[in-house]
Amino acid sequence: MIKRCSRCGCAELEDFNDVEEYYEDEWSWFTSKRIIPALKCKKCGNIYKKDIERLWKDKSEFVGTIHYYDSDELYNCVSDEELIETYKEDVDCRGQLAQGVENIDPKNISLRYEIDKIYTEAFNEEMKDFMSYLKAIEKSFVPKKRIAMYWNGNYTVRIYEDGTKVRKTKESKFISEFAENIDVKICNRCDMNCKFCHEGSTKKGKLGNILDAKWVDTLKRHQEIAIGGGNIFEHKDLIPFLEKLKKLDVIANITVHQKHFEENQELIQELVNNKLIYGLGISLSDANDDFIDLVKKYKNAVIHVINGIVTEDEIKKLMNHDLKLLILGYKDLRRGHKFYEEKKTEIEERQKWLYKKLPIYFDKFKVISFDNLAIEQLDARRFMTEKEWEEFYMGDDATFTYYIDTVEETFSKSSTSDLTERYPLKDDVVEMFQMIKSS
Image (cartoon, rainbow, N blue to C red; front, side, top):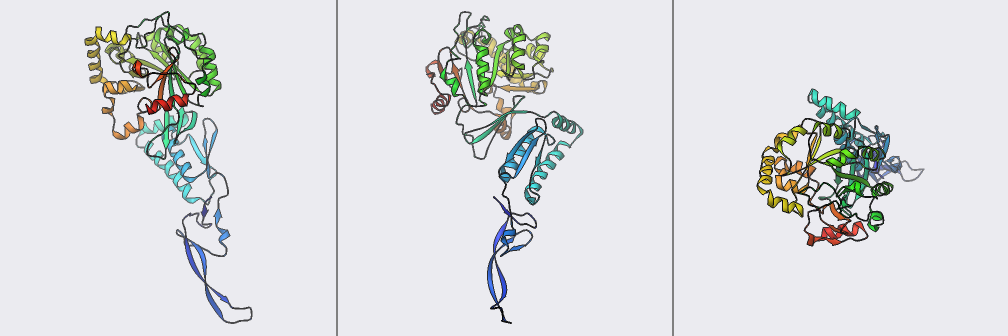
């Protein structure tokens, strides 16, 4: 793959015309000169002519291996560039002690130097003060465990067990072949009758076809499915559906109302233990101590609140408990539209309060995240630099995601799409995504 100098390991070899003296015949005492095509190492000056075969040539399929110590996983890299980029990304995400590089040929001095440089820079950065040192130790011994890695179009996606997602590409932008995440409504049945429900769910709502639907069999390995309703526990096929997704290596996440979360603890614990679900979203209705204690039992639980519905008292009760919070934009659709007309002043006052006070809550929660509608309503971008925005913003609707309504058998850009902008369900998830992207 790569020719390197056998003396110093350098890969920069230039053409060189060497002059050699030789005897014209075996009986002659006179010599002549001739030019011999050769190669010369730019770094150490070593010259290779007739003995060019002494050049070190890497005949291995891989240039090096990354060893992840927490899972004992090995990841082989086929080029210097891949090894350097992958190792740097993992060091940034997991800490410099969570993985190591093995099987680099000792002559590959330049690659070894780059790997050592990444390690040293990361270590020095984390040692700036005592607190960062403690964080480095925590990172090293409690690293994020990767649960999935896959190619999608021109980029790779890595998903970690805490829900972190990392995209990487060598191109100027990410071009997806299929949706990373599909928001799937499986039923319209729910006993809560929330006045602002944008799905319009009722006690006698319908259940969607999720077991026999052809599109399910076309899901890609490691795609994420965000399952919601309605009350998903009302669906008789929920467990078989989750088992089918697991067999397909699809990552299932669910969203439930706080009341249903509290009522179904035994079932939810079983789903988590059997790895039938990963992410657990809980729609807040009453911020009390018992609820907070329940949420803290699940490392991937995220409390969902709605901009314009959540109150300052509720936020104060939730903060300083190391909780994850997702702020959703207010959806002016179905019952949400009627409720907005009735409570417009109250909703807008709460939105103004959250817009103003939002920055003081950032360090009161383990994580605060937003859906795209909340980003727009709260102008969340104002708190980020351009670099931070590029790093953390996960993309517009239909760039990496879309929505499927199995009850109405339609798909659209998102659950807030106008009812006139929804299309009849098709049999292939990629076909639907490409249609949404181009619409």
